[in-house]
Length: 495
Image (cartoon, rainbow, N blue to C red; front, side, top):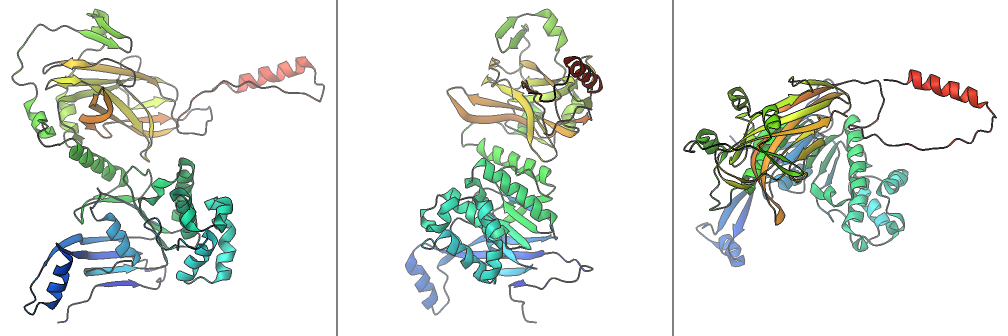
């Protein structure tokens, strides 16, 4: 039997009744030959006994997945994990070493800055050049030119050589060109990170429009993109995780944090070790309670001590054991979302005052602790949250056996919908605030559903503003009639 050769073929779109995958990847592998010296390549080619002088490196190793029409797939992974190589294989830039790959339809691939554009040509000439490369005639590109230039928004630079562009300007023009040629498949690497925030938001909106029109999108990201049907994590050329976007992003974030928090000789324990050790071996001593606020310490405040008593929950520990990560010096042992009557809640009304209470057990000495929470929507956007570091609450000189209870009060000024709450505790180097190590982090630990409210607002989070204005009336309406209308408006607009 003859072995099948690796293929990367474009197949005509089938009838709607069949609906096969737009991208079908099966055991896809890309192997590079790495040589210690340039002469080793020649020695290997001339060897009569076929002696090998190279080391095989698998940039992509046996990857298999299917992507349907209109799906958006995010690809996460650290540098060198094989993400970009995978996109280049799908786009046809690289040829696979083994495995099969089928892509149905027209591909637009924005893989790296400079790809597909001639730096000596003007931006306008490059637009036409790209069109000719994918089989579009000049009249076809001219019919799209106004849309391309409007989206790119680079002004007169369109008539200047691309080599004079900044990375942001190039990204604008390349992305605008690639998305306006009616792609069936759009491949986007991390290049969009060079654009400013307004352009990034415009790109995201455009990607959502393409998705709704049936375009299949694969993109590489190192941050939470906030949209997508599912995602994968790549490591050493292989897919190590796949599933819903929010779940995969949480796993990726945990893996990257664990990688950053495990320097050689750091002496920090991992999460499993901390979970079993608890506070074993800690000597019992007289307990002194310090109440902490952003203004500093309040010594032995009995009323505050009773109102936020420490409460460790085995049920909580069992529930979050598989979804937490961190080095374990200071761990959450309970969380409570409470209303003003001290009742636990999972549903709240718009504008309601709630309190999120964190119970923390210190298992190893820590010089400084910062703890807080964040509330996220279904897209993964961070909408509300706070931490002790931001509020200058002094959680310092903590020792094994100490107990910490924190309470964050806030108003639920969120649009109607369901949200998750993530608590986190960390060490921050006071002299170098950018240096952070996570003691404990529990993604999507709690949930809160916000019910609808009569007052309309058009954002995820409502921040009231003070409005001042004037009306210059030309109708000569009587003041008493105006007052009557005002009172009527006030009466009907109470929510």
